[in-house]
Length: 191
Image (cartoon, rainbow, N blue to C red; front, side, top):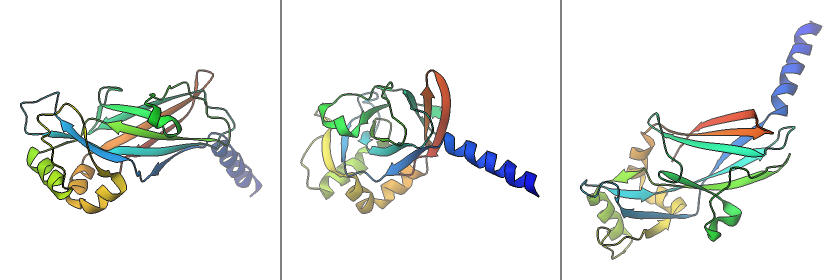
């Protein structure tokens, strides 16, 4: 009877030492729309939705490097082309998150991910613009058009959000200490 208890205690203590949590946060950052600059001939507009996560380091080691990978329906997306990661504390300075950002023991890092891979039809885009009384022609501007905060958008546009949630999107966070992989988190993205 003593041996199963000891084995359980060892297993439990090992799990706690490398516990790094990737916690989703409902974002209050803005939703943007912009012309489909990659494929202007297609009937689509880019819907730029913010993702927010807290990386919480409850491990026994400092994180000195993190790699973030986003997948969309099983395909890896490209950093800078398809998504960009920001430290929320430095978000408005427009500095991309350096992967060498240290997260000490018992600390956390709040990140924002801006993505460029969700497409909606031009008809849906113009319905959204009309809903929020935005007078912009997305095809004639090179700038992103601000729509509304994400936490409001998801409540007021359930059909679009349900459609986006049908895709198999996930985030993979790999954490390193002195070049050694110490923990991997993989989560489905629930928009």
